[in-house]
Each structure stands twice: as structure tokens, then as C-alpha cells.
Amino acid sequence: MGRLIRIEPLTKLEGHGKVTIILGDTGEVESCHFHVTEFRGFEKFCEGRMLWDMPVITTRVCGICPVSHHLASVKAIEDLLGIKPPPVAEKLRELMHMGQIIHSHSLHLFFLAAPDFIVGPDADPQKRDIFGIIEKEPELVRKAIQLRKFGQDVIDAVGGRAIHPVTAIPGGMSRPFSHEARYNLLKEVSKIEALALWAVDLARRLTETYIRDGSSLGDLPTMHLGTVRGGALELYNGSLRLLNGDGQMIEEFDPSKYLDFIGEHVEPHSYLKFPYYKTKGWPEGIYRVGPLARLNVSERITTPRASEYLRDFKAINNGRPLNENLYYHYARAIEILYAVERTMQLLEDDEIVDRECRVKIDRRGGEGIGVLEAPRGTLIHHYWADDDGRVLKANLIVATAHNNGAIDRSVQTVARGLIRGGKVEEGLLNRIEMAIRCYDPCLSCSTHAVGEMPLEVVIEDRDGKILHHLMR
Image (cartoon, rainbow, N blue to C red):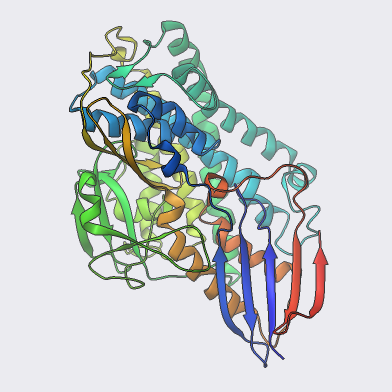
């Protein structure tokens, strides 16, 4: 008798989703899908708003990565208006963005992903969280909090708020950066660099240990998409590079031309669309974005210590792309180190406190595109506006949407590899969730809840009769 297994809601990620698994009569996996279960419609209710409202409105897409939406929005507006902000404004925005990378990556790596590795994937679910880590390794948690706090301090100092920043405006920044803020952050950043080095070594050790045990969370030969500048890792400005799973260059293009290369597919089981590379079509055109993809497409990193770790990362597969999802965590930690080093470089630049941080703008209509690398991957904002500056249409492709096809394929791969003869246990189902957590999906863009969030696993037969019920 066939069975339907639902994992709902998924745990330790931002927002709500579920996984459904259908087992055949012999207990083998017939199908498995990742679902984003609610619809928010952010693009639609941006219509009719004024352009200069957009950098503040779009930060509300996400409370974890609001800086990314804030800056992508401003870049899209400036592209539409045909203006270039002063150099100091670009540096301040990149500084704020580095704070976002440090904060978001630290949050996911230590608070959401690490419990599976440190407490154990089969541990009691009530212990498999940050509190379980506190019991086992309290010093680790103290360091993680310090690292994450520094990222938030950078955002607060540059953006005016630690969450939902307000200082990036069309034409530049609403205020210059103070000497006092620069001095205070410079005092801290050297200590934080030591923590970032510790984080990279920890992530590498945890990843290598898990892989040595023969475990996999999905080894997918997909394409990889990320931003580079002159072949180097770039998170704020650059061109988009697409590689295949063997490391062969497929495309490198101006982000403003994204519609020539990226299409969006719709599947009935999810409200989240499925972007794909147009030339290959769906589903052959599935690609991945985010830390793993960015390091795969990058030839080098421009900061010294992160550059050393990139060489180590590349050597794991003799220079070819790493396709195992587990390496997302190691890549994420390397990007934390890069962001800390880049923060130091920007703070040491005397131009960072230049008072001339904005230029005059004139209202006009048209269309504009803003693209950067959010913590989870490539983020695209595309606006059309009339001559009064009123938004006629908006198109947003967030990082988790780019990864949607790969996440769906990952849960299928892991479920088929683990479920045999219909045997289903909580720890096994958690490994399917671990595959999703590699991507650090941000479903909070479309889903919200208030109150308790229990984990419920229901196993039904094909007629809907409940055969087994697990509740947490």
C-alpha cells in the first residue's frame, strides 16, 4: 500500500514550507517535492508607489537580509534615472552590505545549520538546536553571537538601523559616515577577523567529518551562477557568470541583460517560481546560486586570508566545481572571512568619511535593473516607472527562487537515497531538512506565522487514512 509523508513545517529556516514524499507499494520513494505554501504578492502591491519609497518598502521583504533588498532597490532606481552616485556612497553601501553578509551567514551557520552537526542529526529534536549547542559547547555560542553582532553593528552604523536600513537613497546616501563610527568599528574589526578565521576552520572540520562518514546531502551536477569582477568573487557590483557542473564557462553577461538568459517556470506544487537558464530550457536549465555557486564561479578572492581558503576549497575537487550541497556551509564561512576582511579595507579607506555623499536627481520615467549578491545568492530588482516616478510594474527574483529547482531536486535525491522499504524515522526526515538548510532558503519573503511552530509528520495511505503520526 502506498503512503504519503508530509514534513510540515520545515524547521530551522526563515519562513514556512513543507516536503511531501510519496512511497510506492514496496516502500520506495515514487516522488518527493519541496513546497512553498503561501503567497504574498510583494511585486503586485509595489505598483503605484513612488520610486523613492521603494528602498524602504522592499526592506520589508525580509527581516534577515533587508540590506540586500535596500541596495538592490536603490541600484535599480539609479539605473532607471540614469545617475551615478559619488564613489563614497558606493563604498558606504558596500560596507553596509558586508555587515549584512557577516550577520546573515553567521545566523544561519551557527544557529540553524550547526546543531545538526554538533548535537547530531539523530539527536532528540528538543536538543537539536542552539540550546543543545550551549550545553555541549557554550564557548562556540559566545563566539557566534560576537561575530553576528559585529555584522549588525556595521549595518546600524552605516544604515541608521540594524534592521530595515534607511540611508541608501537614489543619488547616494542620506548622510555621511562619521569619524566616530569609523573609529569604533576599526577597533573591533581586528578581533572579529580572528573569529572569522575560527568560523572557517570549524565549518571545514564539520563538513569534512560528515563527508568522511560517507554521508551526502545531494551531489547535483547543476550549473552555478554568481557575480564576479575580473574573475574574482564580487558581492556588490560585477558581471554574472554561469558555469556548468564540470566547470566549463557557459555565459558571462551584464546583469541588466538577465531577461535574455533567465526564464521563470511554474509548477503546480509551489507558489514560488522556478528560474532556469533559457538556452537549456526547463528542467535542464536548473542552476544554483549562493555561497557554493559563487566560489565555484570565482577564480580568486581579493582579500588575503579568504584567498588562501579559496585555494583549499578549489583543491578539494582538483579545481572543478564542488556539487555536493554540504560544501555550502564551508563556502558560507569563507565568505564571512572575506566580508570581514573587506570591511577592514573599506574602513581603512579615508574616503569613507567624505562629506559629499549624494548627487541631485531629476524625476523621469523608464525602466531600471539593480542586481547584487545577497547572502543566499543573486538578487534582482527590476522596475518600470512613469514620468512622475510612479512604479508601473516590478519584478523581483530573490535568491531562494533561483535555488528552488535545485532544492526540489535535492530533497528528491536525498529521500531516494535514505528511504528503503518504507522505513521512516525522525532522524532520517531531518536529513532531508538538512539538505534544504544547506541553501539557507529565505521563505519569510512569502510566509509568516505568529505563535507556536510545531513539527508534524503525518504518514497516510493513498486513500488519506492516517497510518502514523509524529508531533514535536
